[in-house]
Length: 465
Image (cartoon, rainbow, N blue to C red; front, side, top):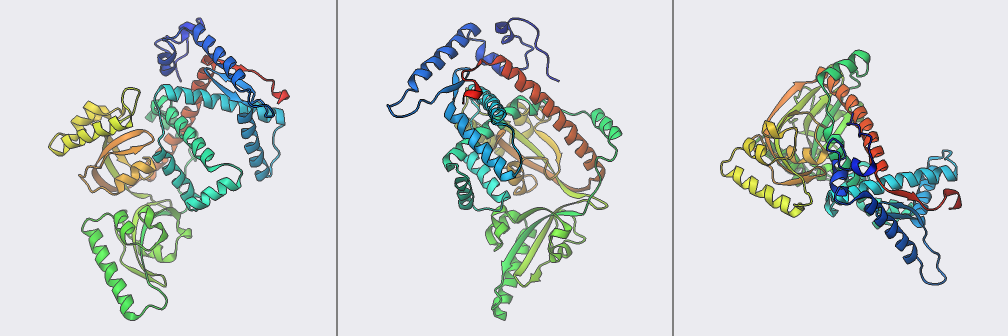
């Protein structure tokens, strides 16, 4: 639980050292609350006047004042229209118009407060991160980027609005990650207590495999010579992988399969969902091992078993990683942070110990004291962006500087190993459930406090809209 805020006048609350809303304290403490509130009211009053536009057009009324910003009637109406479309598409009965507007306005107020706070913290999401998120959304929905754009616009939303809405949601997620998620931990005792109360919460299900796939296609009209040539290529490529070329790089460079752009990774699939050719190819393999070359009507296949779970056992390839994390701030923007981490990388390359550099520079509070050591990671423990970089590293190799939603990273792959994690996954599942519950509880308290500390004035009764 987050510390309670002592009972005292509103101005003093911003400056209490124990107040968990440290960011709100830093932003607002420098301005007396009375003056800060007055500024919000003055700004709002001015905005009411300047919204008067040319004769013949309507006035976009201010519905709510949120600190020094406002929410207009047109903004609320856009959210209402989107919600109504979603309700109709789901074929479910929605709330009354008044309740819908009230709920959406409150959600917009909370989003606006969080975005303002993120702005004060200099938390920014650049176009590259938004584009990366859009690519992930398209991939998960099995759409191309053009098809996703068409779907967005078919739903009545301009693509640029969709882009900026996604940027805002990513910004809020990054803020929550810093202010709430990173501060939540789960003890072994909490896990034991959860498992004692929920002994059947986790049970192995159907066997699932995580595979990576490389295809050299062969047309149905190919000659024997062409078939032999493709088989020889497959043998050479398999040899390159065994000699040290990462499977993802080989798939990206050589594969004719649509999954090549993802490094050939097929993700987790149930055994029943996979071609029997693939299942047979990896039978008896340990995670990380390569199959022999398999032939199908489509061509020649090389399969790598990444991990196995469910059934009687759960064999996965674990990786041990050290990393250094730097986060952009008010005093250092993304360009400066990247350059700083590049200099750290250069020092490591000429002989400095990674662990010492992590202790000196990393902003990851959990791993800094351990020299950046994240311990043994299972598939899915790290973010997809982080794992994608690690998959391409050899043991002992240093990554380039890369960015995730948490900040900028420099990583080193220390080791790989294969383990049966049935019991560990049972505890990992319990840890996930306990942590998710704590995160939700802490977030609810955090957002309530943010809402209470903000200046919010509803200017128009919702039943008048």
